[in-house]
Length: 482
Image 1 (tube, helix red, strand yellow):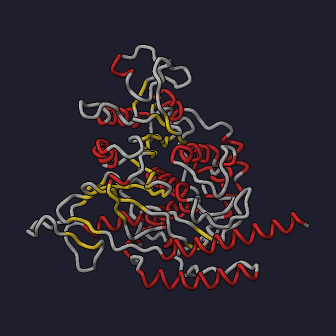
Image 2: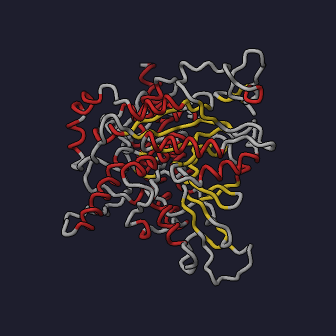
Image 3: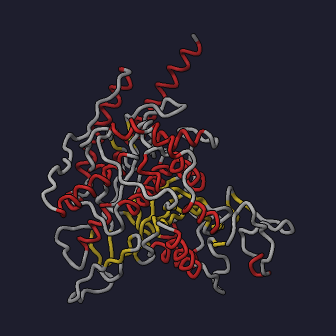
C-alpha cells in the first residue's frame, strides 16, 4: 500500500511539474530579433546581404526580423533558408519515455533537441542538398505574443483539469496538414514531390514515439546505457555519442548509407573516418529485414541507399572553447566554421540552456531555440502537419554569452569529400601567435593504435588535448581547460 501511495504521489508531482514547464515554456517571449542592414549574415555556409545596392542608410540601422515593410537585399532568401531548417522543440503528451513516467521533455531535453536539429541538418544535406528550401517556408507566420499567450492560457486550464482528473489532456494541435502532391505531370513536379517525400521522411524519423528511428524515445533509451535517465541534464559531449549510436543502430534502409563518427580528445583520426566511409554497417541486412514493416507504416517511399561500400559520415567533435567562460579568441574560429557549407552547426548554448547555432552576424551567433513547448504530433500518418517542425523566427546571442562546452558537426559525403574537408579545416585550425591552441586537430591513423606522444614536436606537446603523463593537467568533465 505504501508503495502504491508513493507511486501516486510521484505521478502527481510529475503532472504538476509538467504543467509548470508547459506554462513556463509557452509564455516566455522575447522582442523580435534585430539584424544590421550593413553586415553580411552567414547561415550554414550561405551568405546573405540585407542592404540594397542603392541604400545609403547609416551603418547602425537595423530592422526587426522579417518585417513585412522591409524588402531590401535578399532578406526573403534568408528567411526561406532559415525557416527550411528542421526545428525540434520540447513536446508534451507523447507516450511514456523509457524508464520513467514522463510524457514531456520540458525543462530538461533541450540539448537532445539541439542534437536532433543538428542531425536533421546532416540528413537534409544527405538527401536534399544545401540548396534545398521548403516550398511552404514563407507561408509561416512569426510567433507573436497574442498567439502564444492565448494558446498557453488554454494549455494551463486543460493541464490543471487533466492533472486533477488523472486524464490525458486534449491536444491543441491544428488539423491543417500540407497534402503531398500526387500528380507527376512533369519532371519538375515529380522532382518537387520526391523532395517533399524526403523532407517528410526526415522529419518523421524524429517523431516522439518509440518506433521513430532518431526520436527522443530512442535517444533516451540509448542514454540509459550511458548512465543518463529521462529528466537528467545532457551535455553536448554525451549527446554526440548518443547521436552516433542512434545513427549506427537505425534500422530504416534509407539510413544505411550514412553513419556517424565522434572525435576522441578533440582529435579527429582520419583513418577511422575513412573506415567509416568505406565499411558497410554490421548486420545491416538483418536490420533492413526487421524494419521492413516499420517502413511501410508511414506509407512513404524511403530514399534510395548508396552502395554499401560508400557511406556518408557525420563527424561530431566535442570541444571546449575556453575555461569557465568562452575564450573570445575562438569567435573568429566559430565564424570560419559556420561559413562552411558542409558544417551542420554547433550544439551548445548558455549554461543549462542548450540551443543550436546555425550562423552569425558581426559578434552575435544566430541560433534555433528548442525552449518552446508544443503538442505531440503523430508522424505515422502520411499527411502529418509539418508547420510545427519549422521556425520562422531566428534568435541571436552575443558570442561572449556562449557556454564553452559545445559539439561541432560536419557532413562528409565521401572519401574524396573528407580529404577536402580535412585539408580546409586544417588551415582554419592552424595555431597563430595569438591563438596558441586549436579547438581540435586532425591526425593520420587510427585512434586505438595511435601513440599520442610519438613523433610530436615540442610545440605540439603543449596542445591541451595531448595526454602527457609528465604534466599535470586540470580538467573539467570530458574536456581539458585551455
